[in-house]
Image (cartoon, rainbow, N blue to C red):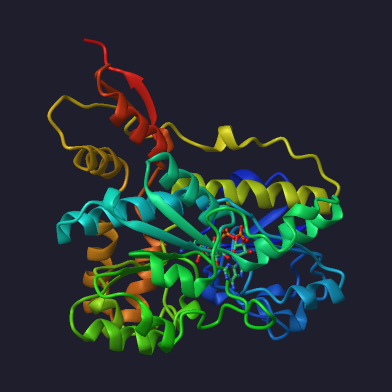
Length: 399
Ligand SMILES: NC(=O)C1=CN([C@@H]2O[C@H](COP(=O)(O)OP(=O)(O)OC[C@H]3O[C@@H](n4cnc5c(N)ncnc54)[C@H](O)[C@@H]3O)[C@@H](O)[C@H]2O)C=CC1
Ligand SMILES: O=C(O)C(=O)[C@H](O)COP(=O)(O)O
């Protein structure tokens, strides 16, 4: 079997070489000709898997994407052609949540407010949004959520189970998008890109909704760029200076609107999910799916793939304000200002499209908050709750 794997998929040789011959190509160079003699294709989000790409893929039996999002894949076409498809749900969700928490705390520090005093609205409460809500709630932050497809699915499920009281009732904390916009100071967008249907998300935040975001509020988008009308967002950000954005995703990547990126407080090149843990989980999930599709045994475990983190333990002394302590621990693992700065530098040097891709291709080692154990004094009980809520392992400091 011949397996073509995107060059940005880590551990591909370790995972796939026992199953067949592994060929590597940068994601944007995978084209119809390169698929002529390929049995299995493993991509990330930058390879559009459509009719044009599959024009000569007569041997192809499997397509896997080591990503959560699937909007780059024509799944209906694959089903019609009898090609097995797999994605990697949830693989980098923890990394995205890490990115959101430290980015919000960074903005709080820069603008002089406390996250604890803000209400956060999460749009899309799936693997990413659901984990974000859980961590924010565990940190005592006031949250609301908006997820109409999930609310509908839960009410259908409740009806099926004969629970009449659940009829059309949204779970506690779930509201519609316009209420969320009215009632929250911070809006975090974690929806997939869906172009059609009753819950389409293309320009979910359109000019009207962007105008309705309250003065002093903040929009963070780590879902897909096309879920927000970029032109309208740029216009709002160029306005009175009463509104901020943290943007990890953009319309038209990698050739994104440089003036929009410049206006964002934090602008990163679609790397919110780029922890090594998240990428390796993706590779591992797709290895298992490929083995299942070809009836092969899969002996590789995720633990075998993951190296020991460079920083395993951090001891905090007394006297730190709580959000300051959180920032310190988070930045010991990951600091999004590094990614913001490298996008600025790379886009100035090479132009936006090449700079954006270069930052993603040469991404430095990043681990997840859960890999760090934070040691605290026994009396720091509240801080211990906050640290654990934020995703760290916490232990009592030895005096
Ligand atoms: N920036 C990055 O690096 C990353 C971005 N992503 C993006 O984030 C998206 C979400 O990831 P997951 O939470 O893992 O996906 P998921 O599929 O687990 O959850 C998505 C949630 O959004 C909800 N949703 C769908 N349409 C909606 C609408 N119109 N309004 C409100 N909610 C809606 C769904 O019901 C679902 O609960 C992915 O599809 C991907 O596009 C994912 C990983 C990394
Ligand atoms: O998992 C997803 O969905 C993502 O957005 C990925 O983290 C994006 O990474 P690439 O696939 O573009 O490397």
